[in-house]
Image 1 (tube, chains in turn purple, yellow):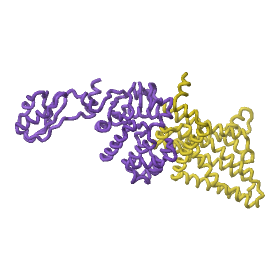
Image 2 (cartoon, one colour):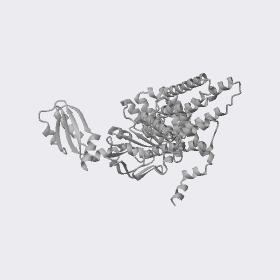
Image 3 (cartoon, one colour):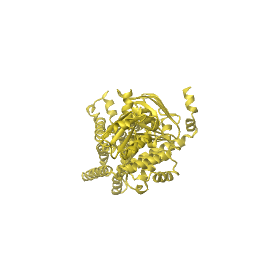
Image 4 (cartoon, chains in turn yellow, cyan):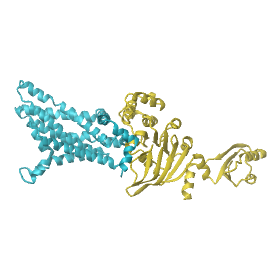
Length: 306
Length: 264
């Protein structure tokens, strides 16, 4: 559905994107991950036909984003980073306007607007003025306008930024429901967001694509070893050697009074053995979990690897 | 070869087959949508009302003073001055047209919708023109009262040509306003640029007053100079073409500015 090849963009002298290539299949949800200024917004703006690349090409639904910009814009729904709404309009009025601008048939406008109002949970505010809405509702109005013309491809730039946790969950749920019928490409700088909603992640840093995989593979592949955290109720004065002696344990580190971090190879799960050892010695097992790599760590890993 | 491939593209082929008038109708529908939204936005803020009040008040003041001087026959002076008032008022109306969209970020939305840059620019221009028509409509009491008090003997011809003239005179002004509004997201700068351009085009013939030869060119460039004939009941084809050329040029440049975002 989306083919991007060797996309490069300069802003004057500054290189914003360098030779970025990727493809997105129909019905897929792909996450764009990277720190601010990495080139996420630039890529999305090019896909939406707002900017032209300096070199390279991008196709959406088979149409070239430069040569056939209007055709591309007909099949995409785009939510820019700053939710663009006319503050003096009412929600329903605004969605109706966006639907008509996007070429929804006059007879279908009403039912389409009603549908997105329902789906994005805007029923209570449909007759309110945009300027009076809370941040969460504004964001939902932004998603609603991107959906109103039933686009084949949805491009969402930071769709959950500035929302409270409940709203974040609702938006994520909504995005998940869209998969299948729609192809979704969204950007974020929050890792859990990607692992919860996306089937595939593209990590972008300083304008270059540095990794592309499923969220699970990404965090697994990047970890040379896994870390298991154990919290003990009655830690012995010298527990380290006992844990270290377990088969497969690479090292043990004391994080604080009763929290220990155990390094183990990624290919075997040592948690049953650790639990057994702790229970047998009567140290009182309070907690046992494997530690996930955070985006920060993945990032540092990827960047330092270069 | 490349052209042939493009024509064979399913989307393109469909567009080519569709009759011309449907395409024109669709083009106008979307343009009208943009214009209508802008008009509603203009009239939901104070700007439209303040500028219209100001405009109508000044015309009323001039009307009364001309009557007091007993010069009802010289009503064309009123329309000369109306044109000058427009030079001051129009920048305030046009400054927001595109600059506001840019500031809100809605321009990004508009330009990623299946809408051409020309539709955006013409839509904005039409909204400005709607303001003008409203303003002119508010001054229609002038010919009405003249007709009434002259007992129907007054020749209203020059009045109507003056209104036609004002519309043609203001069209390039509004287009210049659209251009400046497309350049910046700062509305003050847009208004200043617009006003500066108006003044330049207004006074460009002053140093040439009475001179002949090459100075004639400057007089012909002046937008205001040509307007005076309209108030005398003269509608000249070349004047209309001249005003339309200026309008087109300014709108064309605005489209180029919008399109240039892609390459910056």
